[in-house]
Image 1 (spheres, rainbow, N blue to C red):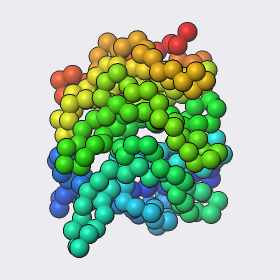
Image 2: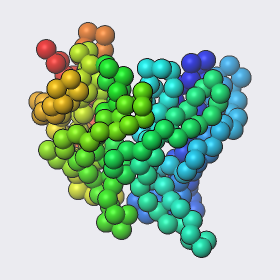
Image 3: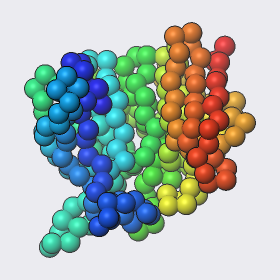
Image 4: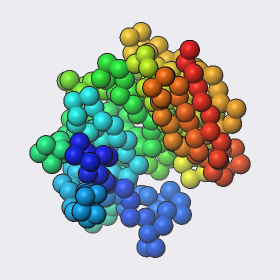
Length: 251
C-alpha cells in the first residue's frame, strides 16, 4: 500500500513452510502474519509498522476516499491450547497513516480471502468472491457484499454466476464496479475462468459483462483516464502464467 507521503506499507502475508515457500495451500494455513513493515524510498530503509489485530494472508486492500486504507478478510488462525487453528477472516481493519495505527471497523458478511475488492464512485466498497467456507473444506466462493465506510456496515448483494477466487476488480468511469476473471476449482488447483461482471450500486444489479477470449486468474487491472480497462497477466487455461493482455471499453 502506498502512503500519502510516498512510503510503502506491507501488511500481513505468510511465512510459508520451513523453506519460506508456498508449495501448496497447506503452507498458507497457520503461517499468516499480523506484522507490518514500512519502506521509505528516500532513505532506502525498512522499519517496523504497527501490527494488525490478527494474522492475515491473502487479505484484500483498498484506498478509501477519505485517505485511509481498508484491509479486509484473509487467511488467519487462532491459537488454542498451543495449537494454531486456521480459519478465514471476516475482519475489516482501517489503517490511518496520520496516526500510524490500525483500528477494527466492522466485519464482512462472509469470511473470505483472495477476493476482488474496489472502491466505487460513491465511496462504498464492492467485495466479491474469494476463497472461503469451512477451513477443512475450503474453496472458491461466489458471495458478494458492499461495505459502507461511513457507518462500518456491510450489505449482502447478489451472488456471482460462478465461484470465483483470485479475481481482480476495478471501478469504471461511471462509478460501477467490474470484476474480471478469477478461478473456480480449488485453491491449490485453480481452474481459471474468463467471466466478467459489473455491479451497479445505484440499482443493486449485478450483471454479466462480455467474457474475455482467454481466462485470467489474478493478473493486473487498471482503468485508464478515457474509461478503458486493461487486464494483463495471471494464470490461464493451461495452468501457466499468461502474457496476454486485453482491453475492455464499457461504451
